[in-house]
Image (cartoon, rainbow, N blue to C red; front, side, top):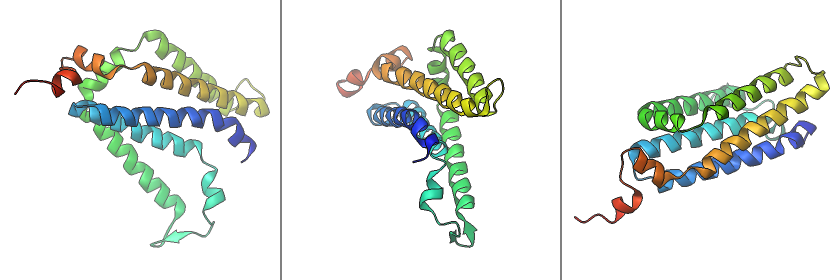
Length: 178
């Protein structure tokens, strides 16, 4: 694993935890919009994890790889584009649930993530940081953003949110008299 990989490891671990928690919500959700929302988050985390593991193809895929006359890069771009489009479609389908989830987050979280994203960009492009330190700053900012995402997802109460969203709780759905 390269030096960048070692610095990225905590962020990747956090992303995998986010992916697993979102997967759990997909399975626990009884409302279609909720399932679509959480499936879209799973797909988003898959795409972000793949982006973070950018060195993996260099280690695992031969440079002359070709399938159906297309290179690995073409196939990777095509698959990621499909993942992005499916996630976007699922977010659009679950727009009411998405909007309610976005409104439930305190403004300070958005401001903090925005500040970290700016610091991440500055570190990545060595703006205000020496080039060697910029990479570390970039990875630390990304890791902090992933930690915020995991904290939000982990503390999210699916049943409470569903009832606040106007849907009956999972208990009421599973134990209603017919």
